[in-house]
Image (cartoon, rainbow, N blue to C red; front, side, top):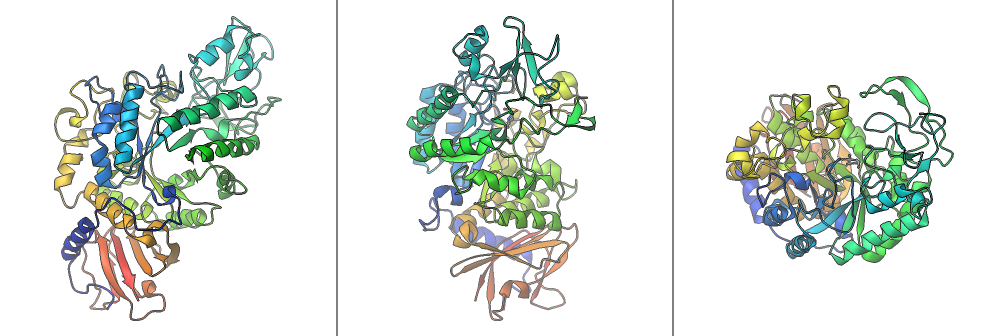
Length: 570
Ligand code: NOJ
């Protein structure tokens, strides 16, 4: 008999809780054949918004340290901390003024060392955000570069003469709106910045730049850093002839002409450089994660390198382009990810993307859908990267007035582009004032949903999104099949249910996900795969429907947006 026939899902639910909590353990299923980062669950922390230890309204490193036990019990293996280096904060830290220190608003290097030590004690690794493409315009390197045309650092950035009076060198646009060139009257030349004026691009063709940046990785190795997330890595090189980009019809949200970034994005030189960087980080024992926006699997594959010698974990953002719960949409993206040249990386949200709860929610089944999404991206073959608060069901809280916008992207693009403040609001720890994030005034307003969606309240609610994440991550941690087993799609013509097996050695796990807003039958014989006597044991389900249809025990009914995860034993 395959299923717990005739039992209600409430029983399944209790069973799943018991199973899950007995799985809580600090170690993974034993197997040394996979590097740690293939089995790890990563968690992105936006430090301004995570936990404020000194009540100045901004999160800080001591705040993160104080929450490490929370992360450990959630089941996190590594934290990626968005930039916390000294910075004038024009782009909230993505404008670095010193790569080898900590901004005082976040604490000190000594605080960082404590954080790294305490994290490692708990088996949590640390990933720094490495802003490789550009610095702050207040970085000493840029100040020196700007000081004179003859400065020894002039060539560390990209300086060019204009085409004529008041005319930049070419038509390249900043992704924050306007020209990508800013004129410096003192030296009579333009400098290039793909992002804000305050974020000049480094010139990676200059070997001294490369050396300085490689040294940064060694500096952080000494401080216990286990890897880097490479910011905007596709933008490292520009065409040296500065050819104009092809212009497309229409205007973008900033009112600038649409264009393809043919000559300043994704140039082949990036790959040679990544291979050189990889040698350095390998020597340091550090892993590379890439902010790799790609349009095709071919482009994504290139980032693994021809011999797996570039980025170990290039993020697959094509996954985030499926913007509604859709079995067929995700099936297609998973198929592509499965065909990738290296280990897949799954992301459904981050500090630049509208929160997944908001993107996928239908207004009626939001919590079920949040669990459904987790049921998918935490059970696929690959490394998942959670965004802080995703495990609670935090939603976007966008500004409604231009004067409230903090993000430069929103300030330039308002009202078409509201910026990214909405997905960066303070972490919701409890139901007290400011969601327990700070006793001061938070830098961004807390989402009003915090009274329900917070760590303390959800911890007490067995059916919460948080407890679903905890259970699922604890099951994943001890399941070789879920950690690195094969992905075997089943029932591929089903328009509503996305189902697959994960199989490793003797263990097979079934994942069936109902992507529709009504109950749907799922044929369990699909999971038996030629073993008619195979049995199934439910590991975790959110289905509130009865486990049988018309008394036929080989069919289970999945309630709207339900997750059903079971171990199949031959
Ligand atoms: C990508 C980062 O994720 C984003 O937040 C930032 O604005 C740009 N890079 C510029 O650094």
